[in-house]
Length: 85
Image (cartoon, rainbow, N blue to C red; front, side, top):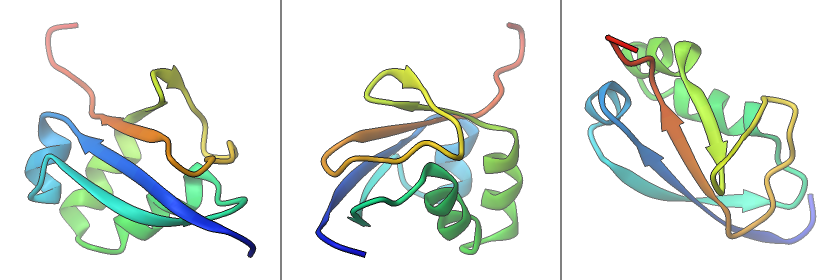
């Protein structure tokens, strides 16, 4: 897969509760897509998988989709749905 780096994942609100942490760092291979990171995180627990399915994602503050490639060194924000708009 090529070079490796790190992605900083920040979990907010219900995502942090389901993950059990507010942030963590994961190794990231060159060419890794957001969907692959989400799939890896989803394998940890059914509760986290449910939250991730409904969440939005920001990569360095910009909205991201599952097919987007994550460059090494980025920050990935996991934003679950919030009540009350």
